[in-house]
Length: 59
Image (cartoon, rainbow, N blue to C red; front, side, top):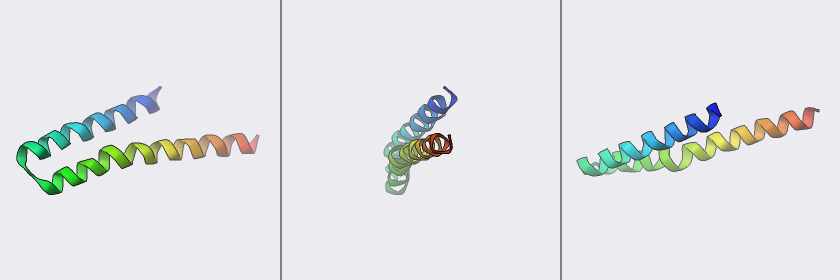
C-alpha cells in the first residue's frame, strides 16, 4: 500500500511541476518533468518487480 501511495505521489508531483513548466514556458523544466513523470514510476515498478521475483526464487 505504501508503495502505491509513493508512486502516486511521485506521478502527481511530476505532473504538477510539468504544468508549472508549461506556465513558465520553460522547455528544460518541461523535459525534466516528462522524464520524472514517465521514467521514474516505471523504474520504481521494475525494481519492485525484480525484488519480488528474487524473493520468490530464494524460496
